[in-house]
Amino acid sequence: MLQQKLIFRPEKLDAAYRFSFDQPFKELNFKREDGALLNALYFTVPDPKGAILYFHGNKGSLKRWGAIASSLTKYDYNVLVMDYRGYGKSTGTVSELNLQNDARFFYKELLQQFTESQVIVYGRSLGTHFATLVASENHPQRLILESPFTKMMDVAQTRFPILPIKYFLKFPFNSSQCIGKLSCALTVFHGTDDKVVPYALGRQLFEQAGGTNKTLITIPGGAHNNLAEFKEYTTEMERVLGKIALKQDE
Image (cartoon, rainbow, N blue to C red):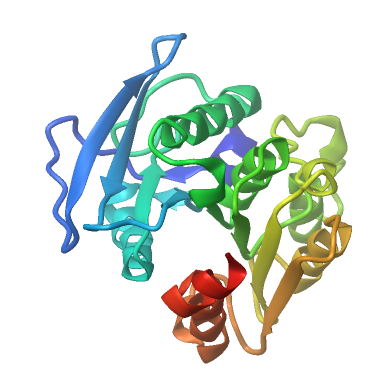
């Protein structure tokens, strides 16, 4: 229970809570096989180039992450973002396998409307594991990772170096096992002053990725939650998702 509280820091929302954002959106609810109810937001644009599947960090709920994820609609993509089990209005038993299967489920949902070549998978912090897992098992257009880690063991050992963590860690979240199977383009953003997930872990994960179509954007002075404020981030995002860049890639 202690490690679950350290890893997951959810904000819970009442089922009657009404979201409000500047961009057009739909609130979606999906019932999983085990009875869990997963709450999600789907932001739309008039003529989308495709869709971005966004996996958020470990703190808060869609009340916060909806605003962050919806900012990506400026690149003319629809954006789908879910709340993990126990976050916001989502319910269900929290386990590594359940969370991973939920991520797989949402990827398949997007494929009902878009082809894989039109789908971008985006992960931030904790969400980088789910994004990496889904992208490694499929063939999306691109995987974008913001402040990623190799595996939860490595993050935990940097914070609690004297504890025998490997003997009781229930949420391995091993992205290193997935990244080598990646077949799509990869973009990684990481700040050098990240005190939550050390820059070295993001760089190591990047180096473990297969293929040559990958880019590591190192942001000097960047912390864990402010990378979007830096020019290096906005310039690269415009390059990989902007209208001009997309036509060149096609």
